[in-house]
Image (cartoon, rainbow, N blue to C red):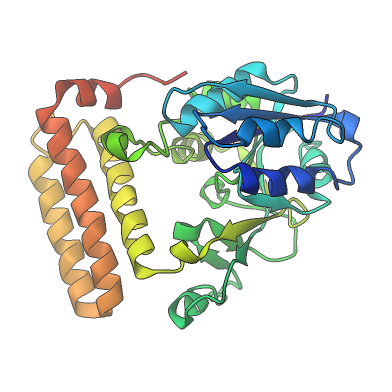
Length: 319
Protein backbone atom coordinates (compact mmCIF):
# COMPACT_ATOMS: atom_id res chain seq x y z
CA UNK A 1 0.00 0.00 0.00
CA UNK A 2 1.58 3.28 -1.14
CA UNK A 3 -0.85 5.82 0.33
CA UNK A 4 -3.54 5.94 3.01
CA UNK A 5 -6.24 8.54 2.35
CA UNK A 6 -7.94 9.59 5.59
CA UNK A 7 -11.23 11.50 5.57
CA UNK A 8 -12.94 12.56 8.78
CA UNK A 9 -16.61 13.41 8.38
CA UNK A 10 -19.78 14.23 10.28
CA UNK A 11 -23.28 14.55 8.83
CA UNK A 12 -22.18 15.48 5.32
CA UNK A 13 -22.98 12.29 3.44
CA UNK A 14 -23.80 13.96 0.14
CA UNK A 15 -20.59 15.98 0.08
CA UNK A 16 -18.65 12.85 1.02
CA UNK A 17 -20.08 11.05 -2.02
CA UNK A 18 -18.60 13.68 -4.33
CA UNK A 19 -15.21 13.34 -2.62
CA UNK A 20 -15.27 9.56 -2.94
CA UNK A 21 -16.38 9.75 -6.56
CA UNK A 22 -13.29 11.83 -7.36
CA UNK A 23 -11.16 9.03 -5.89
CA UNK A 24 -12.60 6.56 -8.38
CA UNK A 25 -11.10 8.68 -11.18
CA UNK A 26 -7.48 8.70 -9.99
CA UNK A 27 -4.62 7.99 -12.39
CA UNK A 28 -2.98 5.94 -9.64
CA UNK A 29 -4.15 2.28 -9.67
CA UNK A 30 -6.84 1.74 -7.02
CA UNK A 31 -4.89 -1.14 -5.45
CA UNK A 32 -2.04 1.30 -4.64
CA UNK A 33 -4.06 3.31 -2.11
CA UNK A 34 -6.62 2.76 0.61
CA UNK A 35 -9.35 5.07 1.86
CA UNK A 36 -10.21 5.34 5.54
CA UNK A 37 -13.41 7.20 6.39
CA UNK A 38 -13.76 8.11 10.06
CA UNK A 39 -17.31 9.03 11.05
CA UNK A 40 -17.32 11.41 14.04
CA UNK A 41 -20.88 10.77 15.13
CA UNK A 42 -23.03 11.19 12.02
CA UNK A 43 -26.79 10.70 12.12
CA UNK A 44 -27.32 11.02 8.35
CA UNK A 45 -26.53 8.65 5.47
CA UNK A 46 -22.75 8.76 5.90
CA UNK A 47 -22.30 5.02 6.43
CA UNK A 48 -24.51 4.22 3.45
CA UNK A 49 -22.53 6.70 1.34
CA UNK A 50 -19.32 4.80 2.12
CA UNK A 51 -20.90 1.42 1.49
CA UNK A 52 -22.14 2.57 -1.92
CA UNK A 53 -18.51 2.88 -3.07
CA UNK A 54 -17.26 -0.50 -1.89
CA UNK A 55 -17.50 -2.01 -5.39
CA UNK A 56 -15.55 0.80 -7.07
CA UNK A 57 -13.09 1.41 -4.23
CA UNK A 58 -12.14 -2.02 -2.95
CA UNK A 59 -9.75 -0.67 -0.32
CA UNK A 60 -12.24 1.59 1.43
CA UNK A 61 -12.83 1.12 5.17
CA UNK A 62 -15.29 2.78 7.55
CA UNK A 63 -14.77 3.51 11.26
CA UNK A 64 -17.12 5.17 13.73
CA UNK A 65 -16.09 7.22 16.77
CA UNK A 66 -18.57 9.69 18.25
CA UNK A 67 -15.93 11.41 20.42
CA UNK A 68 -16.03 15.11 19.43
CA UNK A 69 -13.12 16.69 17.59
CA UNK A 70 -11.47 16.51 14.20
CA UNK A 71 -8.21 15.37 15.82
CA UNK A 72 -10.02 12.22 17.02
CA UNK A 73 -10.81 11.17 13.46
CA UNK A 74 -7.37 12.11 12.22
CA UNK A 75 -5.62 10.07 14.89
CA UNK A 76 -7.90 7.06 14.47
CA UNK A 77 -7.20 7.17 10.74
CA UNK A 78 -3.47 7.20 11.42
CA UNK A 79 -3.81 4.23 13.78
CA UNK A 80 -5.72 2.20 11.20
CA UNK A 81 -3.63 3.19 8.17
CA UNK A 82 -1.54 0.57 6.38
CA UNK A 83 0.76 3.08 4.69
CA UNK A 84 3.46 5.28 6.19
CA UNK A 85 2.27 8.17 4.01
CA UNK A 86 -0.97 9.68 5.31
CA UNK A 87 -3.10 11.74 2.95
CA UNK A 88 -5.54 13.83 4.99
CA UNK A 89 -8.50 15.32 3.14
CA UNK A 90 -11.76 17.00 4.09
CA UNK A 91 -15.10 15.50 3.14
CA UNK A 92 -15.90 18.52 0.93
CA UNK A 93 -13.02 18.20 -1.54
CA UNK A 94 -13.03 16.86 -5.07
CA UNK A 95 -9.58 15.65 -6.07
CA UNK A 96 -7.78 16.21 -9.35
CA UNK A 97 -7.34 12.86 -11.19
CA UNK A 98 -3.56 13.30 -10.70
CA UNK A 99 -3.86 14.02 -6.97
CA UNK A 100 -2.62 10.77 -5.46
CA UNK A 101 -0.07 10.05 -8.18
CA UNK A 102 1.52 13.46 -7.65
CA UNK A 103 1.61 12.99 -3.88
CA UNK A 104 3.34 9.62 -4.23
CA UNK A 105 5.87 11.07 -6.68
CA UNK A 106 6.60 14.00 -4.34
CA UNK A 107 7.46 11.65 -1.48
CA UNK A 108 10.02 9.84 -3.63
CA UNK A 109 12.37 12.54 -2.41
CA UNK A 110 13.28 11.09 0.99
CA UNK A 111 13.80 14.57 2.47
CA UNK A 112 10.16 15.52 1.93
CA UNK A 113 7.87 15.09 4.96
CA UNK A 114 4.83 17.19 3.93
CA UNK A 115 3.11 17.70 0.56
CA UNK A 116 0.35 20.05 -0.52
CA UNK A 117 -1.10 21.45 -3.72
CA UNK A 118 -3.77 23.82 -4.92
CA UNK A 119 -7.04 24.03 -3.04
CA UNK A 120 -9.18 25.68 -5.68
CA UNK A 121 -12.57 27.06 -4.66
CA UNK A 122 -15.66 25.40 -6.09
CA UNK A 123 -18.13 28.17 -5.41
CA UNK A 124 -21.75 27.03 -5.18
CA UNK A 125 -22.77 30.46 -6.40
CA UNK A 126 -21.09 33.60 -7.68
CA UNK A 127 -19.10 35.16 -4.81
CA UNK A 128 -19.49 38.85 -3.92
CA UNK A 129 -16.96 41.34 -5.23
CA UNK A 130 -15.12 41.69 -1.92
CA UNK A 131 -14.35 37.95 -1.93
CA UNK A 132 -13.38 38.05 -5.61
CA UNK A 133 -10.92 40.81 -4.72
CA UNK A 134 -9.41 38.62 -1.98
CA UNK A 135 -8.90 35.83 -4.52
CA UNK A 136 -6.87 37.99 -6.88
CA UNK A 137 -3.11 37.18 -7.10
CA UNK A 138 -0.77 38.98 -4.73
CA UNK A 139 2.63 40.39 -5.72
CA UNK A 140 4.06 36.85 -5.82
CA UNK A 141 1.27 35.58 -8.04
CA UNK A 142 -0.26 33.62 -5.15
CA UNK A 143 -3.96 33.47 -4.38
CA UNK A 144 -4.84 32.65 -0.77
CA UNK A 145 -8.02 33.00 1.28
CA UNK A 146 -7.17 31.20 4.51
CA UNK A 147 -10.66 31.55 6.01
CA UNK A 148 -12.04 29.54 3.07
CA UNK A 149 -9.05 27.13 3.04
CA UNK A 150 -8.35 27.88 -0.61
CA UNK A 151 -5.03 28.69 -2.24
CA UNK A 152 -3.20 28.60 -5.55
CA UNK A 153 0.59 29.01 -5.51
CA UNK A 154 1.10 28.60 -9.22
CA UNK A 155 1.98 25.82 -11.62
CA UNK A 156 5.52 24.89 -10.56
CA UNK A 157 6.71 22.27 -8.09
CA UNK A 158 8.58 24.07 -5.30
CA UNK A 159 9.60 24.08 -1.66
CA UNK A 160 7.21 26.10 0.51
CA UNK A 161 6.54 27.00 4.12
CA UNK A 162 4.56 24.20 5.82
CA UNK A 163 1.89 26.71 6.87
CA UNK A 164 0.83 26.85 3.20
CA UNK A 165 -0.40 23.26 3.33
CA UNK A 166 -3.98 23.46 4.57
CA UNK A 167 -5.75 20.65 6.39
CA UNK A 168 -8.14 19.87 3.54
CA UNK A 169 -5.18 18.63 1.44
CA UNK A 170 -2.45 17.65 3.90
CA UNK A 171 -0.14 14.69 3.14
CA UNK A 172 2.47 13.76 5.72
CA UNK A 173 4.82 10.98 6.72
CA UNK A 174 3.47 9.05 9.67
CA UNK A 175 6.86 9.21 11.44
CA UNK A 176 6.87 13.00 11.21
CA UNK A 177 3.32 13.30 12.54
CA UNK A 178 4.19 11.08 15.50
CA UNK A 179 7.39 13.02 16.12
CA UNK A 180 5.30 16.20 16.26
CA UNK A 181 3.01 14.59 18.86
CA UNK A 182 0.05 14.34 16.51
CA UNK A 183 -2.58 16.93 15.73
CA UNK A 184 -4.01 19.39 18.20
CA UNK A 185 -7.79 19.73 18.70
CA UNK A 186 -9.77 21.30 15.87
CA UNK A 187 -13.37 21.60 14.58
CA UNK A 188 -15.15 21.12 17.89
CA UNK A 189 -18.97 21.23 18.06
CA UNK A 190 -20.54 24.53 19.08
CA UNK A 191 -21.00 23.61 22.73
CA UNK A 192 -17.30 22.68 23.04
CA UNK A 193 -15.66 25.59 21.22
CA UNK A 194 -13.50 26.37 24.26
CA UNK A 195 -11.75 23.02 23.70
CA UNK A 196 -10.67 23.95 20.19
CA UNK A 197 -6.91 24.14 19.52
CA UNK A 198 -4.64 24.99 16.62
CA UNK A 199 -5.14 21.73 14.69
CA UNK A 200 -2.59 21.00 11.96
CA UNK A 201 -0.92 24.41 12.48
CA UNK A 202 0.92 22.84 15.40
CA UNK A 203 2.30 20.15 13.09
CA UNK A 204 3.33 22.75 10.50
CA UNK A 205 5.13 24.74 13.19
CA UNK A 206 7.01 21.62 14.28
CA UNK A 207 8.05 20.89 10.68
CA UNK A 208 9.30 24.45 10.27
CA UNK A 209 11.24 24.31 13.56
CA UNK A 210 12.96 21.09 12.48
CA UNK A 211 13.69 22.54 9.02
CA UNK A 212 12.08 19.55 7.35
CA UNK A 213 11.14 19.83 3.70
CA UNK A 214 7.65 20.71 2.46
CA UNK A 215 6.75 20.46 -1.23
CA UNK A 216 4.00 22.14 -3.24
CA UNK A 217 2.97 20.10 -6.25
CA UNK A 218 0.30 21.66 -8.49
CA UNK A 219 -0.76 18.21 -9.68
CA UNK A 220 -1.52 17.23 -6.07
CA UNK A 221 -4.52 19.51 -6.05
CA UNK A 222 -8.18 19.49 -5.10
CA UNK A 223 -11.30 21.56 -5.50
CA UNK A 224 -12.73 22.71 -2.18
CA UNK A 225 -16.48 23.27 -2.08
CA UNK A 226 -17.43 26.76 -0.88
CA UNK A 227 -21.18 26.85 -0.11
CA UNK A 228 -23.31 29.96 -0.24
CA UNK A 229 -23.33 30.41 3.53
CA UNK A 230 -19.54 30.87 3.54
CA UNK A 231 -19.71 33.75 1.07
CA UNK A 232 -20.94 36.16 3.72
CA UNK A 233 -19.45 38.60 6.17
CA UNK A 234 -21.15 36.67 8.96
CA UNK A 235 -19.19 33.53 8.07
CA UNK A 236 -15.88 35.41 8.00
CA UNK A 237 -16.73 36.83 11.44
CA UNK A 238 -17.37 33.30 12.69
CA UNK A 239 -14.05 32.09 11.26
CA UNK A 240 -12.26 35.04 12.81
CA UNK A 241 -13.79 34.20 16.19
CA UNK A 242 -12.56 30.61 15.88
CA UNK A 243 -9.11 31.83 14.85
CA UNK A 244 -9.02 33.98 17.96
CA UNK A 245 -9.68 30.86 20.05
CA UNK A 246 -6.96 28.94 18.23
CA UNK A 247 -4.42 31.74 18.67
CA UNK A 248 -5.23 32.06 22.37
CA UNK A 249 -4.75 28.29 22.73
CA UNK A 250 -1.34 28.51 21.02
CA UNK A 251 -0.30 31.47 23.17
CA UNK A 252 -1.13 29.63 26.37
CA UNK A 253 0.69 26.44 25.31
CA UNK A 254 3.76 28.23 23.99
CA UNK A 255 4.17 30.97 26.58
CA UNK A 256 2.18 29.79 29.60
CA UNK A 257 0.40 33.15 29.64
CA UNK A 258 -2.21 32.27 32.23
CA UNK A 259 0.32 31.40 34.92
CA UNK A 260 2.80 34.22 34.44
CA UNK A 261 2.44 38.01 34.30
CA UNK A 262 2.26 38.15 30.50
CA UNK A 263 -1.55 38.29 30.43
CA UNK A 264 -1.51 42.09 30.51
CA UNK A 265 0.82 42.13 27.49
CA UNK A 266 -1.83 40.30 25.48
CA UNK A 267 -4.34 43.07 26.17
CA UNK A 268 -1.74 45.62 25.07
CA UNK A 269 -1.11 43.61 21.91
CA UNK A 270 -4.84 43.46 21.14
CA UNK A 271 -5.21 47.20 21.72
CA UNK A 272 -2.44 47.86 19.21
CA UNK A 273 -4.12 45.59 16.68
CA UNK A 274 -7.45 47.29 17.24
CA UNK A 275 -5.83 50.70 16.68
CA UNK A 276 -4.17 49.47 13.48
CA UNK A 277 -7.43 48.16 12.07
CA UNK A 278 -9.25 51.34 13.07
CA UNK A 279 -6.73 53.43 11.15
CA UNK A 280 -6.19 51.37 8.03
CA UNK A 281 -8.99 48.85 7.54
CA UNK A 282 -12.42 49.29 6.04
CA UNK A 283 -15.58 48.73 8.05
CA UNK A 284 -15.87 45.06 7.02
CA UNK A 285 -12.29 44.29 8.04
CA UNK A 286 -12.77 46.01 11.39
CA UNK A 287 -15.98 44.07 11.98
CA UNK A 288 -14.27 40.75 11.23
CA UNK A 289 -11.22 41.70 13.33
CA UNK A 290 -13.47 42.55 16.27
CA UNK A 291 -14.80 38.97 16.26
CA UNK A 292 -11.21 37.72 16.35
CA UNK A 293 -10.62 39.77 19.52
CA UNK A 294 -13.82 38.41 21.05
CA UNK A 295 -12.78 34.81 20.42
CA UNK A 296 -9.29 35.39 21.76
CA UNK A 297 -10.47 37.07 24.95
CA UNK A 298 -13.28 34.58 25.54
CA UNK A 299 -10.75 31.75 25.44
CA UNK A 300 -8.24 33.57 27.65
CA UNK A 301 -10.93 34.25 30.26
CA UNK A 302 -12.27 30.70 30.08
CA UNK A 303 -8.79 29.22 30.57
CA UNK A 304 -8.31 31.47 33.60
CA UNK A 305 -11.59 30.43 35.20
CA UNK A 306 -11.78 26.74 34.24
CA UNK A 307 -9.00 24.49 35.58
CA UNK A 308 -10.14 21.55 33.43
CA UNK A 309 -9.90 23.65 30.28
CA UNK A 310 -6.44 24.89 31.24
CA UNK A 311 -5.24 21.33 31.84
CA UNK A 312 -6.69 20.30 28.47
CA UNK A 313 -4.76 23.10 26.76
CA UNK A 314 -1.38 22.20 28.25
CA UNK A 315 -1.61 18.43 27.70
CA UNK A 316 1.60 17.04 26.19
CA UNK A 317 -0.35 15.60 23.26
CA UNK A 318 -3.79 14.31 22.21
CA UNK A 319 -2.83 10.97 20.71
